[in-house]
Image (cartoon, rainbow, N blue to C red; front, side):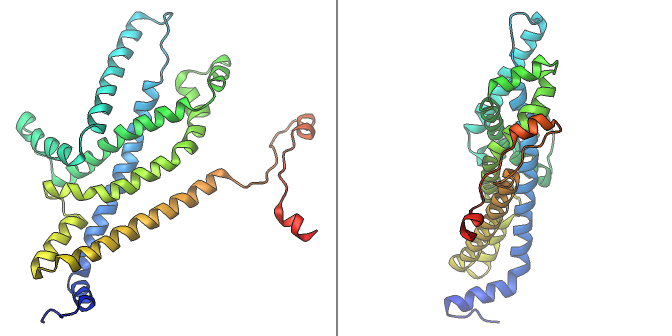
Length: 266
């Protein structure tokens, strides 16, 4: 079958011939981005919580030394992975693991590992900022009733900080969807790598990458809409009642915002 002469005809021809290849590449891109973002968030939460552990002069000397060393190591990790391109990190980790440690990573494992630790470095600073944005009085109140630092983080601070950093989590997912293309340098067959093969088959680079650009846009736009919907769900309704079992507190603590629909009916 010959290649059509018009632009739209070539687009349709490529989709017909290589549609499954584009779908497979897009699926691999989304899998790496989603899994890498989720694991990166877990890494970021762990690093962020450790970085905010308070240290006072009254603490045990060994505890202070260990925490100091751990925080220095974590700071080095964050600065290195935030200060270097993911493409360079992919080459360094994939080939360096074999050269230095005689450990041959599979391409699949390397792709998830690289995106995860890169995302973790960015999320660590996001989580640290989210924790510090919460009123210190809440931390003091939690510790006053006997909570440990870990209990305070899990039960008091992190639920509030999570809402504040949700936009950044979504932003990292969008970035990872686009940045998975750099993994092609180590042979990961994601969307960009697939497109290069398709384009080279008929020398239709413009048409092939037009399709790829549209696919990337659809993926990122759909994810951004879903994440924004999730954020609104986390905010809850504009009108609500303060939940309490104390009847005296209930009568004085009722909070209800006016509904614009009531004004319209009047």
